[in-house]
Length: 82
Image 1 (cartoon, rainbow, N blue to C red):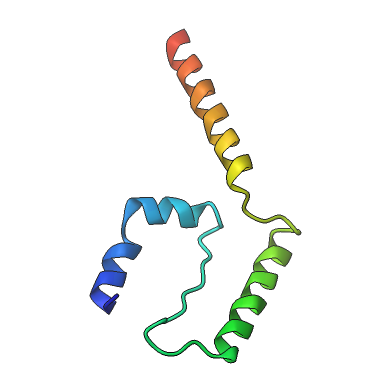
Image 2: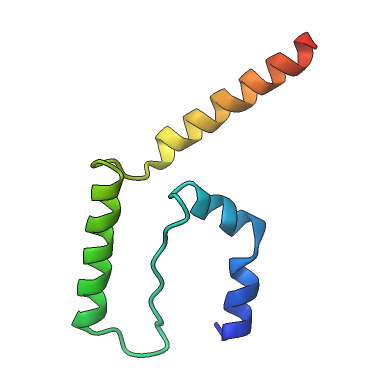
């Protein structure tokens, strides 16, 4: 992915929504270059930092999906009552 493509991707609403679920934090590895042990160590360190900041919690697709479904149902119910 070129720098231009990355910038366009970063501005994509779906990507921004995903990142917002993680307090705006993410880690990028340039895979055009050979990935070495240093990259992996940095990634693992970053993951540990994220988990520590999140008080041991991590993203779970099923939990997030259930939460979003519940939010949509509550919003729909509120709209119907108005």
